[in-house]
Amino acid sequence: MFESLSDRLQAVFQKLGSKGRLTEDDVREAMKQVRLALLEADVNFRVVKEFVAKVTEQAIGEEVTKSLTPHQQVIKIVHQELINLLGTENVPLQEARPGPTVIMLVGLQGTGKTTLAAKLALHLRKKGKRVLLVAADVYRPAAITQLQALGRQLNIPVYSEGTQASPPDIAEHALEHARKELFNVVIIDTAGRLQIDEPLMQELEQIENRVHPIERLLVVDAMTGQEAVRVAETFNQRVKLTGVVMTKMDGDARGGAALSVRAVTGVPIKFLSTGEKVDGNTLEVFHPDRLASRILG
Ligand code: GDP
Image (cartoon, rainbow, N blue to C red; front, side, top):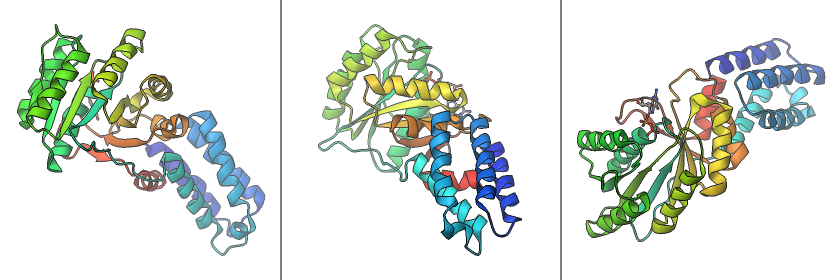
């Protein structure tokens, strides 16, 4: 991901570097290329417009054009604005005090929610937490067996009541169980649908009202581009999201969703998922500066 964006940006900066001193026109021409590169990477057009305006305003200032290394200054400005776009700083998961900390995972079907539930459980166990996974996706029986299989593989308990119970009940019973058994964290894998629908949203609101999850994380498939941003906006209107997890960051999508979602929704990206395997290497805590550096190469 981001390879072609990185290549395009590097080419723009190389050209700038070859010019020595920069005129305002040089900067404007470079920004035109940056704009095209971002649009081709499938970044939301409003986000691109604002981004380019901010960079241009700073880059045509005298401090830059009269400096001894003007193109380096432009790169620095782009780097900083990318960081700002991505949310400036990592926003860590919140902990409920007193516990248990309840984390609700929401998202469309196939985005990687169940896989992420297991990855997150592993991540938190490494931090010394006792984690309980909760199978609340009762409409897709395979989701329950998938979560149970992952739980067995990782030796992490999975709370399930099969497919007959209602998800809000399951969530509440799971939380009671977690309190009794002194679990620190409860991760609820909720149902996804192929599309956002009203019953899905109502069910999420009911779970929210019953167990008050301190974290409401939307799992978003980075491969779905701008559609992912629209989904995030819709979910955020109903279930006030506390974070986004971008999955399939190992794929060859153009990366636009990852670059737009924070700017459009205001919801911070908290993790990146980078593979199908559930192990310690495929979940990355999201750091805006690291991704910005990766994009700029
Ligand atoms: P759910 O329907 O949202 O619970 O999605 P699943 O967890 O069942 O994942 C759907 C598919 O995406 C499965 O084939 C997963 O192996 C795959 N998957 C999940 N996360 C990632 C990821 O980060 N990268 C890749 N390449 N595949 C993933």
